[in-house]
Image (cartoon, rainbow, N blue to C red):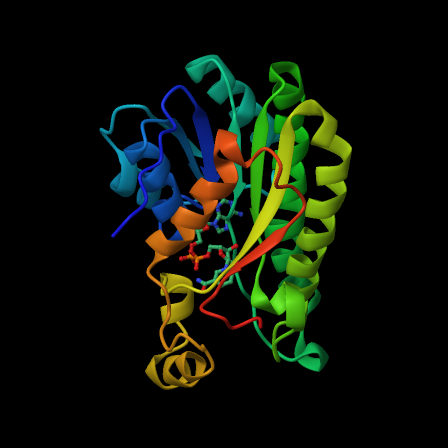
Length: 245
Ligand SMILES: NC(=O)c1ccc[n+]([C@@H]2O[C@H](COP(=O)([O-])OP(=O)(O)OC[C@H]3O[C@@H](n4cnc5c(N)ncnc54)[C@H](O)[C@@H]3O)[C@@H](O)[C@H]2O)c1
């Protein structure tokens, strides 16, 4: 069962597109006919996932490097002629309780999520303003809404993304740009890394009783990225089986 979207004529850029949720989102856009820019800091995984596909433009970029992000955005616009949709999805975790957290653990997580989302958004908004159209979808988390033990760095970053989303939504609404966020819950390498026992405990807290397939996150992003969603901006859409209720 799947919803069929039509993104032909659009260019969509997805960060963290080598695996997990980002890969599923980029696949949805590709299946829907878009030109797709896939961005990831892991060139090997990016190549393995996307090499040889038509309408795909791969850029091995670390989103914490704002100069590289700007250069990639300019390159995608040159390659495809536009940049209509951006999904700020790249993410990492460095978990430990706050009293054991190092400066490096704190900063690494803040940089990838918060600085990366800022750097990409700053680079794409001028193109979207010029076009009079844009869809930005950021990826936050249950942890950014409610907190999770061992994730103060990640909570600060994801909570920051929510406030950032609402602010940029207000700043850009008059230019035909919408800025929204999803809060996912999906079985990806990031989640599966916690191990079977912890995974079973986590699954027990989900009202729907399972982790989603990453493609179920892509469906929500497709809705927020559609032309028809022009009147939806500044929202955080939990796609989490009821977890955040
Ligand atoms: N999986 C879940 O249930 C869940 C829940 C809440 C939020 N999220 C968020 O969803 C997003 C995707 O998570 P996932 O589960 O697919 O993770 P994942 O680890 O499976 O994939 C993350 C991808 O991001 C890339 N990446 C990491 N740092 C990067 C950087 N600096 N620059 C460019 N690319 C980088 C990785 O190489 C990887 O391909 C993340 O923002 C995560 O915080 C996931």
